[in-house]
Image (cartoon, rainbow over all chains, first blue to last red):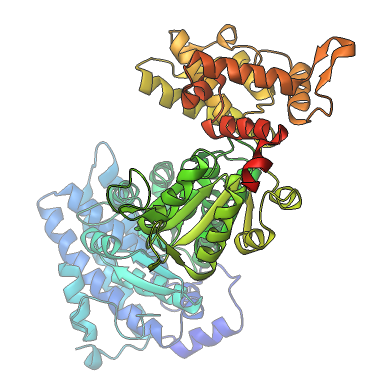
Amino acid sequence: MALNYGEVVAEYAADDRSNDARVDEHGDWLDTAALSRLAGDTSVALVPKMAKLLISELRRHASIIDAAAKTEDVPLLARASHVMKSSAATFGLGRVQTAAERLNAACKAEDPGPVQVLAAHLLTQIDPSVRALEQTCEIDKDVEA
Amino acid sequence: MAVRSESMGQIGARDGKLPPGLRTHSPSILLIEDSLAQAAAYTAYLNNAGYTVEHAPDGEAALTILDGRAPDIVVLDLFLPGIQGMDILRHMRRQGHTQPVIVITDRASVDLAVDAMKEGAYDFVTKPFGADRIRITVENALRHRNLASTIKTYRENYEREDFHGFVGSSLAMQAVYRIVESAAKSKATIFITGESGTGKEICAAALHQESPRADGPFIPINCAAIPIPLMESELFGHVKGAFTGADRDRAGAAMLAEGGTLFFDEICDMDLELQAKLLRFVQTGSFCRVGSSEECKVDVRFVCATNRDPLEAVTSGQFREDLYYRLHVMPIVLPALRNHSDDIVLIARHLLSRVAADEGKSFSAFSPDSEAMLRNYAWPGNVRQLENVIRSIVLLFDGGVVTAAMIPTPVNQDVENATMEVVTQTAPSTQEDASDLNVRSLRVIEKESIEKAINACDGNVPKAAALLGVSPSTLYRKRRSWVDDSGQLDKRRCE
């Protein structure tokens, strides 16, 4: 069962800020404590809107990474992974953040190494993370469409 | 750009801006961030703290906004598509944008943030960050900006090194600048007092330049330098045939000053009869040209100056009391140079630069010991004396640096002697001739020196004044005082 977004906010209201990254039934796809902090720092109403923006952004950059990996366009991979790791961190998408950080670091290294492997791994992290975010934020796909 | 349009399509917005609810409205912040999701979060953080946020998704949009108006603060992501954050920072500094820039970076790029701070960024925050972190950083940046603005205003108003021809950064001169600025706005008559060489005419010109009449004429008239019979004509003009030699109509200073400022220098030396006419002119703005009964009316602002104590002149009957109170509306007292000695070196450097350029010499600086001499001397003749000393050095010597050996007597005397000299020169002797002590009074020596100089210049008073390092009006006044002493003035008044 997906964690209800309202529960996340309730958790924030209980001033649970001091806890570090929490692992719930979404596994470590989504750090709901990070999302709670974001709700507290912005507003309950805004989080779903921002999550939609993030999901759109992740999908967009996933396409870029997919194409760039095929052509081994390292600068483009570096750019897309940089945006992805920062956004993912803000919204608590820990796995995406970690995978994007690894790809970004490899792209910046003198010998980029297996960027295609790292890119492929990153892409596998996106869909489960997005699903966790959609469920948590109760994003209605009909409305989204 | 594709990222932007795709994201916007999902939430229904098509104008490339953040969706409703994420846009905002108090101190203004330009947020330059290509990730719309993160921009939305940061905007909400800052909106909740009471700031108005404008979002630029890329460098091009940011430069357009920056070149159009100035936000209070810029929050800048260093990694942008197209124009990079560092390039925006450099562009801002080149264009003179002084607002604080807070750089956004990630943990892996802190070195870049440090480089950005070397380029003038105020601070940086590392992603991911919460609302408190950016809010506190923005608050600090705003305090920094306000403090910088306060310091700039203070410097502009209280640390000016020059002002409309004046040179000096001392508190005494800052006070003068402030009074001139305040007084200039009104039409009230200004009465400037100060020793010879303190810049009374510069002050009058500054008042004119700062006034709403700055586009009009500034007409100075020296009441001591113009012979009394010519003074009325100089001031009010004359008509053809008014007196021998008046072969045509001539406008006087009053007419020429229409719409501007009329400056009476050495006002206490004006003839008493003319003072009565001046009083009427000041009261009504009307006058008659010499030889005419037709009234002329002009709109002028009166500024007058004297190096004497005007009340003393009133007491001694040399200046009409009613005219004094009519003119003495807003007094400005110019400090003697010895009373703002912090400015001596600054003024000397300025004069050296100007005089060297005038004379085609290469002097550009003073040695430390020569500066000490200038600073320690009391300058009874004030800035005019300082200028004459510098001009004589520039004319007599060559080189790039003025050394102590070039400084003439009495400026090269020690502090104690210099001070003594001022005391003796400024305190009038009550004895004309202390012959019992085989000492002649300074007044006698002064008279002899002046007469000798005038004779040496074949009667040319301005040339003699230059030789003596004083203004011509000082010599005219001195000569008149000798006439007063011999009773001839009283005789002339009776006539």
